[in-house]
Image (tube, rainbow, N blue to C red; front, side):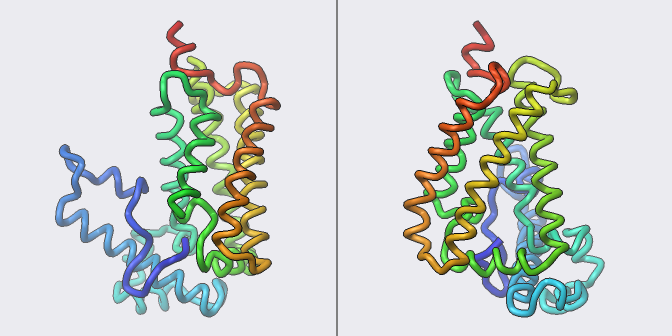
Length: 244
């Protein structure tokens, strides 16, 4: 999302590339080349969008900067907006893993709380706090297309979370009930409020270190409130309670 240098992109993580790993979990040479190409394209796009504005840069210009064809850009990023919001797939994957791989005595909301606190502590780009993040937020706010894609991504993740909560409660992930949809909507709204707080602080010029300290308290408070507000049983319960 941010912190990208020319010729390179965001650090590899639990993004879409994770599915390319071989049986031993390591990437092949071809897969590493594809990952580096994806990172280079996104990194060049991010710099151009921040420097000139999202609407003032064409995909063809991104392709020239990354030294690839326009078709190659679209092979990696079907939509221009995803060149800048390139961590959406990673965010969804991290949420899925946090819920499905949570501890035996851990509820889905507790697993998500732990995930957000971990991202913040590591200054991961998805943790919403870091040096230079104000440039990312300002670029999004200045581009209606990016704001629309961000809202769409939030809706997609909310739907995924509703399915995860239904699955955690022993139901059908493909047909989450109302309580699970309500719980997902509340959790996502709480997370959005927490991220908005971090963005507002960054745009106001507060230092990343100051924001990080306060943001930990914001996340904890958010999930304290959510755990009291969630419908009974809609949080999915712990793995141990499902097996009881």
